Image 1 (spheres, rainbow, N blue to C red):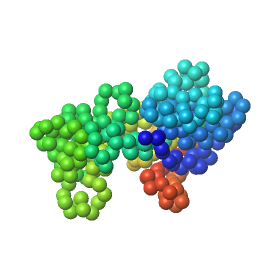
Image 2 (image 1 turned 135 degrees about the vertical axis):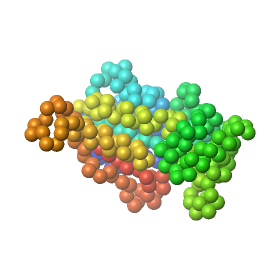
Image 3 (image 1 turned 60 degrees about the vertical axis):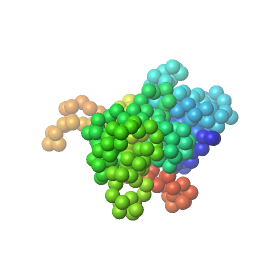
Image 4 (image 1 turned 45 degrees about the horizontal axis):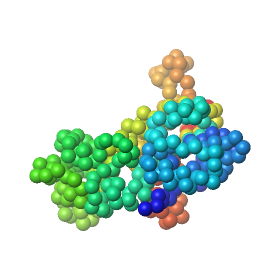
Length: 311
């Protein structure tokens, strides 16, 4: 299957990056190279684009898609949390802009054997980087009921989290849950028929929660943002596209703290904590997809773009 993924908020992101033709830019979630291609097109003499992705299929697709740009583009298979180390190996210490397009790609969802989607009956997997050992199957079969409840409640924001966790444990006591179909059955049994009939697919939130846990998506985001801002040159920008309320909250909080890190009590006449602002939040409110994009790509409907500019 070809790596196909429609780049969300493409025009808004490219505009938000304020690309300098001779600058160095990083796409930390390269995917098929849609955003990266648009960045590379705007680079001139001396401009460089570094693409990072942990998914082997994404790296292969992007290499093909970005081949026309030659040495202007370098692609690294890694997680964006290791951006500083990846850049160091390329002799780069500072960058003029960076993009993160979070969440799961259309390719990952639509590739049956990757085990991301509740739409196919296939072995449970959900690893973005297939070199890692932990899979969705391990989480579903080995995590304690309480841990499953917290994951489904916090990452999936499912009000039936407690009942779903209990039904998963009941099902795996009979036999290990090996496939997405078997997990679907356990979830379905936990949700009242009236709710199932009225809402969307009953497994959507739980699958999202298990995927986030499997790939440490929120932990990586939380641990990385401060360091990524530090890599920027003055005037450089970090653009982050989120698809989940918890992701958006992490980005919003990190950007606000980077802009206003002072911890002095509000009644202090002058700052004595010594913490200085790293820059400014460009987006007071997140940028959302327009009507045309929503009509063209239904998966863009939960997308939010936030931008930070380094001082």
